[in-house]
Length: 157
Image (cartoon, helix red, strand yellow):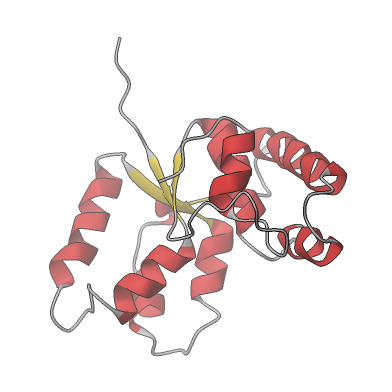
């Protein structure tokens, strides 16, 4: 039995799409495709990403768009026991990992940020994390999503 991959989108994908190649003014098809992909059960994000998108200007097009999406687009992160178990594992790894600076580990552990929750939701529910961040195993001043994902045998793209 083959399973269909499901993708979990980081906020930087939405923000960079809005600012560069997929601006709402001339590429509404991209944003419509995301909605259709969600309806097909392929594309999601998480509550923390939704909150990050809502931190922008009230009239920011990506904020307005995100607030028109069905509630199911943004997966609950802190209200899911399985996710919170995975989050605990992610935090245990983060705390014990001496490769990164304390400041990097503190930033990754911020409860109001999406990065660690993206890893936890992907781990708990079998998603592929989509981010514009690039892996850099030598980085010490920031815990990058692709590098954290690899620790938990997730396949970021």
